[in-house]
Amino acid sequence: MAEEDDVEALDALEKESKEFDKDAEIDRILKAFKLDAYAVLDLQPGVPESDIKACYRKKSLLIHPDKTSNPSAPEAFDRLKKAQTELMDEKARARLDEAIADARMLLIRERKWTVDSPELKAESFAKDWREKTKAVLIDNEMRRRKQMKAQLQEEGRAQKKEDEEIEARKRKREHEAAWEQTREQRIGSWRDFQKGGKEEGGKKKKKKLKPIG
Image (cartoon, rainbow, N blue to C red; front, side):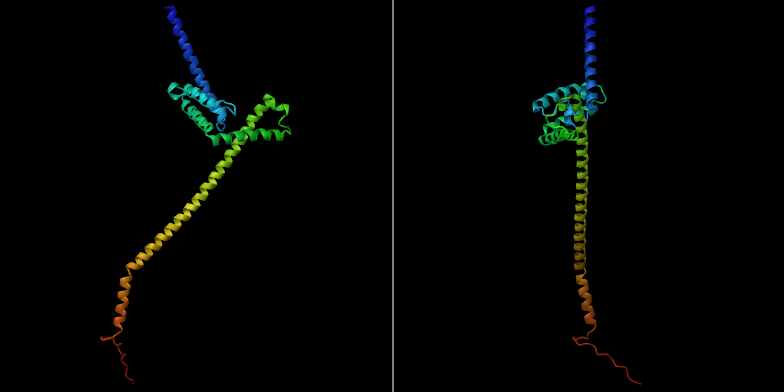
């Protein structure tokens, strides 16, 4: 009996430990800088695709909303999936790698170091590099949104112009159709007018002269 109680206690502790790990990972993902897919997956830049796939599989199984009652699991899972998708996209990953490299070079220039400076190996530099990467990614995202906004505005202007041209052509067609519909009526009216100004036989009516005096 005592042995069964020990097994149940160990199972309960293991379950509690797993839930703690899940909650901790969900919390880490939600606190990670979401514009940096490496940070969301807790990976270092430059890792091979196999590491990305393995890391995503392990973490997605751990925090899957169906496997935990944590209310933040769906949001964390979505961020994890988005980060994995970005890193598996060649162009998106290249843009992120470029931003990270730019952040490193900006720090080196600001501090007037060289790529061989020993300070680059310090933990403090790694921390500053992460912070600079955030700034570069935010700046890139703001520029991207401005460009998108400008593009949408330009597309809106082009669409408005096209709509106006379509409406103008529509009005012209309607005017021409209306003109054509009244053509016979106008011709008939003109014929009646011409006929009224002539006598039978086609001769014009002579104006009666008023007697003088």
